[in-house]
Image 1 (tube, rainbow, N blue to C red):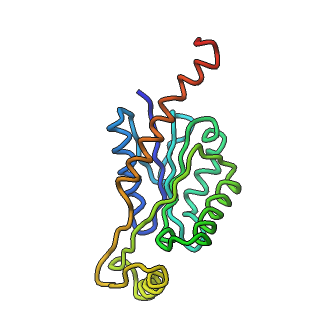
Image 2 (cartoon, rainbow, N blue to C red):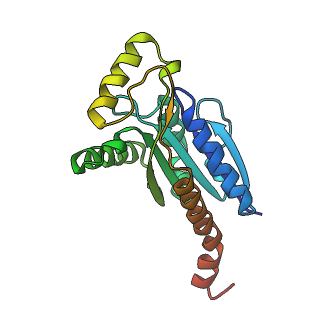
Length: 190
């Protein structure tokens, strides 16, 4: 049974839920899926058949722990099927410039870390107003109003398309599944 590591970085906790949903989808596909926080894991990419990294964007960057883990594991990551899931609220704006800016953040991250993910996915995160301090709550309300998002700060809003995330994780599972077949086919079926 193939083993897949799902490494995550989270600030308010939503990305860990995304990582858990990915892992659950992989388990339903008959994989062993291990979920680990980037800053707390001793797992190395080379011990797994595939790796998913999920991180959220804050002020144009991902969590430092994710950057460190990917840098330390980039050679092993580049030697197996991998996926990068970028979590942010910017996708709610549905504007070409915003889409380009978000892709530029992903591209900068992969260039700086030396990692070349097999597939990437940008997904909407959550507005967790009830978990923010006053200043952050007001800043997020202002940003949400500009993007056409929800501004009632007395509750939280989850924008993640869970069905789309399941489709993505299933697609990644097929990528990991196809890898041994492609390797065997390239070597005369040996």
